[in-house]
Image (cartoon, rainbow, N blue to C red; front, side):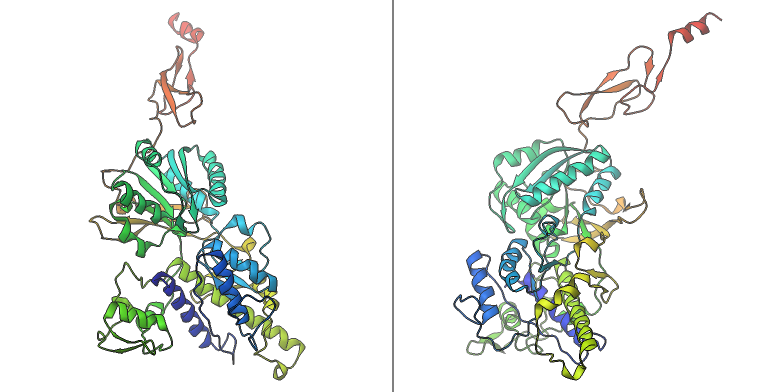
Length: 504
């Protein structure tokens, strides 16, 4: 299990502990959790899920060696592909599944995933946010890097519609093939040539960002393409992957859903040690790897010679982050959604039978669906938790700037916000003075296909070219253009009026 995944486990444990201490949610009931680390290969995923469901090491459908099941729901992620594979089994039993990975509107819109819920906020407003950013800096010429799959195709279609409203043009579209979050087809030399030679200085990346940028650096030794990368945290793990991207990431602008810091989470991680959680094998392994502890192999527990006052906070930033990530926040909300749904189900049972007759150890997970579908509660910081994608509100976005020069600085600095619910013209707010642009830019970058025409000239649209690309030609006789960038004349002076004046 990677340390990135381990923070998700800690977020889940933190939420479970928080709920168990809350007398208003599931009183007299304690939540627990089981952790399974599945491989990324399809057949092994099936084997792992069946082993969890049945307690059997061999695949024997509809048989179980478990005397009773206490699992109410399962959380899956980060890859949608793996979650979908798990769903093919769980849906047979109508077992509730919550995925905390990136929101995928294409898949969920097919209405076939009746037992699967996406916890992440929907990102339909992201396109509007990116377009607003382009307009703010007068960028009308952008490149696009997208996955070669349904997600990329949908993003391209929606992005074109959004840009058509704002007269922004796409300079090029490059597709990259992934398997899950792994690059399957390498960027070719032609890809790199297009990136380098394009007059578009702004490139929007929709896909596993760090893989792309790391590849460009490691394979093609391109450390400065003099481009501004615009991306979102859906495909980016900031604190862990900055260390690998070096100079190429410097100056990038990232959209990420805004959420408040969960009180107590950092303190919880600081206090998570093998002594406090002796059953947590991975904690023992982390102490063994990073703090040079002696390891007692027979019991898989720390033995002696450990660094005093060792904590997760002392792990290198490239391996572990102490701040809650977007995925960890989704895990936190998923646990709360399940807990509140179980609470509502218990209340509904009390209405029909005395509380003394309710067997709390007997669970029918499929009965949880009506409560999960209509759940709408606030978490501990006041954010709404909604699983029905039709009722999800568009989130506010923080816009952060990567400061990675000098190399390894690795800072994410908030430089703006985008609030979809705000009035038109007030949705985007930027602090331009705080932005560190990529190396090579001494002022705000200028990404246009053609420069605006000066007064006295007008635009001439070029055949088979986007509308952002044009030539400038002098205005005809008797016509003037008194504004920069005009496509048509602003005024016409008639000979008859001129003649009348000269005859006075």
